[in-house]
Image 1 (cartoon, rainbow, N blue to C red):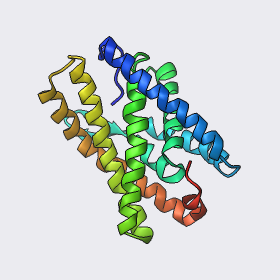
Image 2: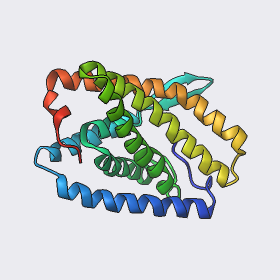
Image 3: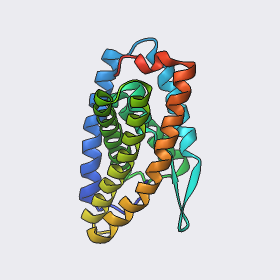
Image 4: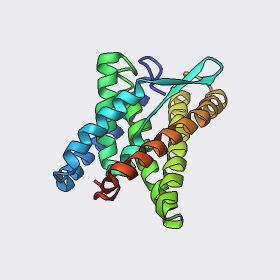
Length: 211
């Protein structure tokens, strides 16, 4: 889902960069106001975990592979604004050091995976837990939110490619949504497995104030 350089036209990558910049600036202000001593180590550990997890790809068939995105997991633990900051950090390092995603497309990649992934993941999970309580709600909410955000993020990516004229909408949207519907299953299982482990060893982390 990382868009390389040259795949977005000028108006699209500048526009997406501007939108992402506004969200990042707002996230910095909000996190600075709400962050506590308990949040600080978790921010670093979560960023390191997501960065490392994204380095491992799993096959989904047809020569295609997927990898963990992590925005929903971060949002469940720390809230959507923290998710924006951590995903921005991870995606920027991947772009600048590992050339995973283009520099001109960085704003679009942050929007698709950090902003859409974090906010939709957080609110889908929160909504489901209003109806499904306890551990079951945590697992169902985490899996469903993870799957939905992978598909939604891929659709946003497809729309940006379509607007840029890289590929027709009727081809790129079904293709991206279809393959990421499969990748989303892996995302959901990884999120649930991580939450299950945290419930056993550090249940207090699931009750932190969201930022």
